Amino acid sequence: MTNTIQCKAVITNGRGDYVVEQINVHPPGAGEVRIKIMSSGICHTDWDSVQNWNKPFIVGHEGAGIVECIGDGVSGLNVGDKVILNWAVPCGECFQCREGNLHICERHSPVCSNDLEGHARLESTTLNGRAIERSFHLGTMSEYTVVKSQAVVKVDSKVSFNAASIVGCGVMTGWGSVVNAAKVQVGSSVCVIGCGGVGLNCIQAAVQSGAAKIIAIDVNPERLKLAKEYGATHGIEAKREDIDFIDVKAEVQKLTEGRGADFAFECTAIPALGSAPLALIRSAGTAVQVSGIEQRIDFDCELFEWDKKYINPLYGCCNPERDFKRILSLYESGQMKLEELVTKTYTLETLAEGFDDMLNGRIAKGVVVIA
Image (cartoon, rainbow, N blue to C red; front, side):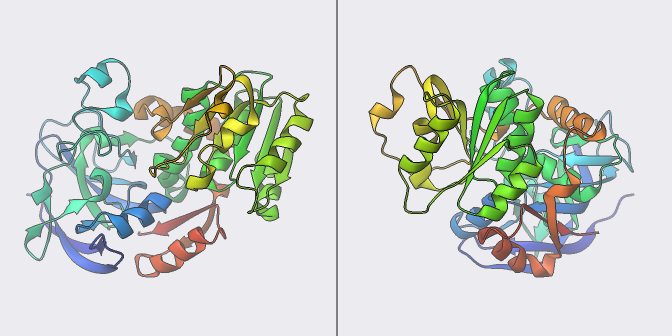
């Protein structure tokens, strides 16, 4: 019989504090799998949740690992399988799932649903004898986790666990916003505001979509150099005081025959730049807010003139079984950089360093190596 495992995990109180503690991860129940986590990506959302969720939970929602044991009724997975975890767990039956919007499942989404139905049983993981929640149904900053089988995508690829872990959110969000949400067209012009991990994946996706002109925008000249390595054709160094993007808009218009770009993607998570992509697109162009800004933003309605579209997709409109495999296929064929995105690695005990590097723009993506 499969036993309970005692292991390390990063636990937060959701009020800014986090520590590494011992937890118990129990055997999976029906429809569940227990995963040995090998790598966990570090995301801005992890930092925000640690600061603001105001409840105890296990941190982390980007992860890759190995199936360690399987509960009753699970098919398509075997012990030893290499997997990527997906936090937008679809039920397959609700209105949105039937519409093909698996990422905004009405029953299981940790963003679109108010209950915990998407979780594996909370009691499958305990701290000091009490059940503890896992971030976004996963809790990947832990040596082991129990998740629903729908949260697992099997990987048939030589990709490293470090690179595979970031496919589960950072890569998917940027890539999917271009491919699935905006549907960037061949020959189009694209602006990407913010060239961190998500922005670089917007750039990669724009290249794969056949965009003719890809304009990277950042306050950091080193990031602009990096953006060109990922396929940007032009770079504009923005000034921090130019929050209305007056100077940036002028530069973009010079590059786009005076009309503005066909598409613009905001990837900074800075509320003051929430309307910035609208300033950069042409009439009837498409602005995309990729980064998940949740604060109130006041818009100048003139920015919408004329026939401009502004969309706010969640998680790159992810269909995990379809999209993770498409991304890995592009990686296998040499069209997608994944290993290169992982700038630096950390341990559970050095997570604070990883957060500091991320918040200060020193890395594209950081990964906690767990096993």
